[in-house]
Amino acid sequence: MRVVTNSMEGSKPLRPTSEATLRRLPVYHHLLQKRLVAGVKTISCSQIAEELGCDATQIRKDLAVTGIKGRPKVGYDLAALILSVEAFLGWSRVRKAFLAGTGHLGSALLGYSRFNQYGLDIVAAFDRDPDRVGTKVHGREVLPINKLAGLAKRMRVEVGIITVPAPVAQDVANSMVEGGIRAIWNFAPTKINVPAGVIVQNEDLYSSLGVLLQKLSAAHRLR
Image 1 (cartoon, rainbow, N blue to C red):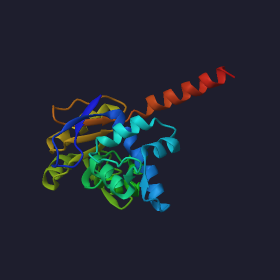
Image 2 (cartoon, rainbow, N blue to C red):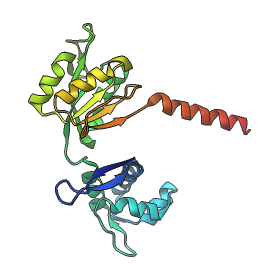
Image 3 (cartoon, rainbow, N blue to C red):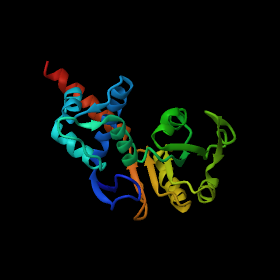
């Protein structure tokens, strides 16, 4: 899969970036933050590669998509590199998000306070269960799902998070699209259909768990 993004919003023409690169950049960012806290001023791809057990050439290619350039035999200014990665990933601009589905997973996401540091502010939660509507989850009042589209339009919400059961996920996605939401983070174990121009990121927890347990079983068989 390839997605279209750019290094600084509005500063350079859009260009394709692989999803693999997008998944590696946060890993680099975590390491860079640790080095910054430790007082490090500069860092090279070779140093990152040694720490993470990765290929330095791949790291160099990944970092290049952010638009930053290192200096030969010196590497990158660490603070500037962190800012470049954050801007490229969209973390430097906080976007409003609506979450639909306040069960165990939805509640856990609502309680994760660090999303704001990574460009996401979940400003409202929605549910179809009358027993949940009107209650509060981590300080947010749960609103009826039929209010989602209208509020999304008025508040100009850009991101939707789906944590509802599979049978109702498409209806929720339709409401989000109707409300003008253009990026959906889908945790429901089903495919959702959206118009062209709407971005969907699927997080299939069951598939990930299946891969993990299969690898564990294979490892046991090799013993």
